[in-house]
Image (cartoon, rainbow, N blue to C red; front, side, top):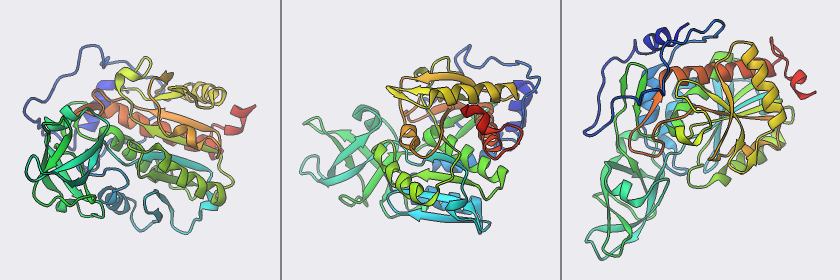
Length: 373
């Protein structure tokens, strides 16, 4: 199937294109190559753009991930059991299955960049000191922002705030409804789609949250789990709580695939329409020999991917103690900006890649044991 056909399928459900003032609506020439024919590409389905947009527009910062957890719970439905560890992680698995049955684990983090509120200040009047992460203070001060309570689960409870630089140079947050040490804040942007492009906030990480969710549902197997770590952007060590749980409860894992969204410029030979297996993340090694063998086998079977390394890092290396681990990446043009851009084709191919990894580990047409010789 050509990239053009792939893109046309994806945009059926969501044709309206909306863009905020000053938003970018065109792709730099050469990032997407257009009409490359794929002789053996495997297609599981098409991107549900309504669900993707819902995930991206929801606010979830730090471990305050109630709105996204609620959306995922509804998406998986009563056919899946949920293990929820506050300030840690959420694990979905087919109902009736226990973590001991897990052989395949797909992982993504839920939180986006933003910050939290500390105590009130005298100047400017009505302002609060803010802690922030993921972008420079000037970027937050220039952006549309929303805030919500750390315990919130209903996205409709979010309210508008603004940020500015105080005379002493510190970032402060202002707005009605702010509660010291309880209010979290992030960008407020609507998702827009045009042809094969999706644009909005929090595509890092919600594009891979989407891919992990849909790959798990597609496999529909009690040995497959979807693990969502509540925080990475502000505290990569939150994943250790999940690792400790799984080391006790899931002794027979065969593969862990952590999926994340790096910036296009941070990924070697990155293309928006093609997922990658990263065997190097920053200074970390991600099971390189296993990754090379897995990439070769997946490519032989017709999957769209490329083997690469990244200048940036993620939580992947924390999972290596559990099982052979793969770092799956699909890049974004403008990570941590108010409006980043991704390819729907790339997101679907990332989902397909996760499905193929799951089939490989479950002893389907690609036996994972042969990759560990």
